[in-house]
Length: 374
Image 1 (cartoon, rainbow, N blue to C red):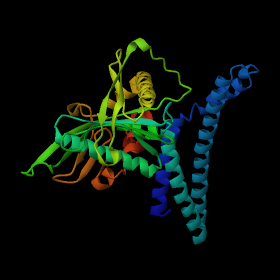
Image 2 (image 1 turned 30 degrees about the vertical axis):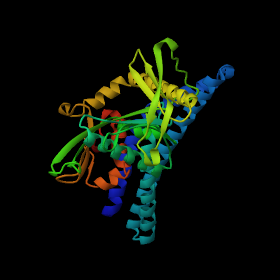
Image 3 (image 1 turned 45 degrees about the vertical axis):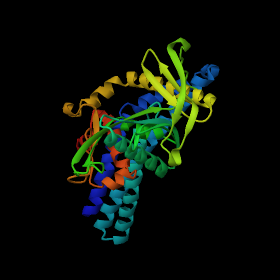
Image 4 (image 1 turned 90 degrees about the horizontal axis):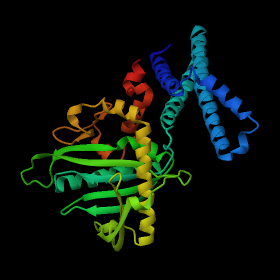
């Protein structure tokens, strides 16, 4: 087999390995038998909601098994064709099979990514908050750069982006901003972005042209679906109204009806500053419920989260990614060691590679590189 074809086969095998781990391929047939037995229960539809969930979960498993087995069979068939063509010195058969392998490689990589977006809320829309850290104008400018980066990423995905609230920096940039990003798997993609982002560059605000380090935090949490019930005790919250003004330009926004909701048991604070006070209350309450839902997801996934956090260098605290513009060009994720020198591309929203590497941390608690080399 030619070297290019062998390389393609190895990539497909690695995708299959990760798909198999995600599916837990050894137990999948037994889980499907369980589903089939429950589907035959004559009392299944006494609870329509539970029945529909069962049918969706069963179909998801059926599709996942079919995808895994289909890729595995197609890989074996094309390898056999190449070996047969080489044995009979039939170049046309070999070329056709190699082309089929390339197409299979692309499909396997796509299915691998889709398999990583199977969390409970991964398909939901999401809220994304950006907050400047200590450092004054430098951090506010960095917060603005990050906000633009995520907006550009979302637009490239075809997602809808709505600015919920914004607080301008005193000289430049923003102190904070909250966006609602709507689209399939918006939360699943963005959830790995929560954490502290570090920038190293020559400051445009320093007349001495010295290198500066700035920090900005990002917080991502899912928009709660209407069918998810989150109870909020009215006695646990305080609702304040206040005047809020935006940063000017396309985000100019001045209103006396901005709303801030404080949830006393958790200390969560959410804001909204649209034109209508009624609308702001509704938006802020939805954001609060989403934050409370995120707390519940974090509680359920505590063991996984702890394993992921332990992979980072404790000396970096909560930092997840470093963006270095001087003295060299490099963006590096500190959890996965994924890095790229295309800093301009990343800051223009080319984030899929960084996000995919982090999503793959779920595979047996390993990084993508560890999972693929095992």
